[in-house]
Image 1 (cartoon, rainbow, N blue to C red):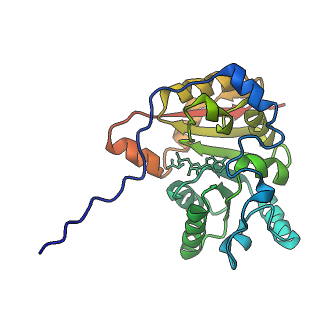
Image 2 (image 1 turned 90 degrees about the vertical axis):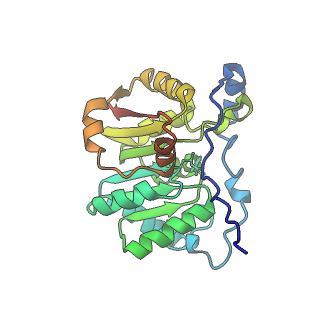
Length: 256
Ligand SMILES: C[S@@+](CC[C@H](N)C(=O)[O-])C[C@H]1O[C@@H](n2cnc3c(N)ncnc32)[C@H](O)[C@@H]1O
């Protein structure tokens, strides 16, 4: 008898096409932003520790709450010794692994809150022998302002960020005013914010927010050429396969 093989589970779903923002509700939630409201995984101090022995407790991976001081010192050295690019929400890591391989003189840091994906990314970077990429399963929103000084990041890549459709969840979006402010502070003058999305409402929302920021300006034509050789992410491949439109948005930090 021939066994029936079921089709592999698709990695992504299209999701909703309605993107809602309830400004009053968002303002209310933002009052508790500094206390960690909306952090993925909740209070980082109460997050279950990675299973022991976890590769996420050793370089080139880290979790701020559980990494030892010497380990964090190694991270600090890594962050300041070459031009730095950061990906937030690296998913399966197709883009960042190839990009790091293509740019051996730059340093890279990938945040992915799903620990399983971060472990997988760590394994792959070691298989490839990459020395210029660190990974973390921290919520980037929590870790970034704690590990980096202002004006230190050359490029942020935020590719197909979760839209968090419902007003109830909008505080979990990366594109809320306090996080856009953090990105703009951490970017060095001339640094690039590279974003992609296939959610038209989210694209519009991000464009409005970025255009209103006095320290940022669009950087479309130059950036399109610079990042043309980048490997597509899983979500991008999914969109290509089903002919779903998506767009890239580029902003750069204005010189002071
Ligand atoms: C829609 S997926 C896109 C993944 C990948 N960039 C791609 O294009 O295929 C968004 C990813 O971001 C991760 N993520 C969401 N919020 C995050 C945060 N605050 N810090 C780190 N990772 C985050 C999610 O776990 C998820 O894997």
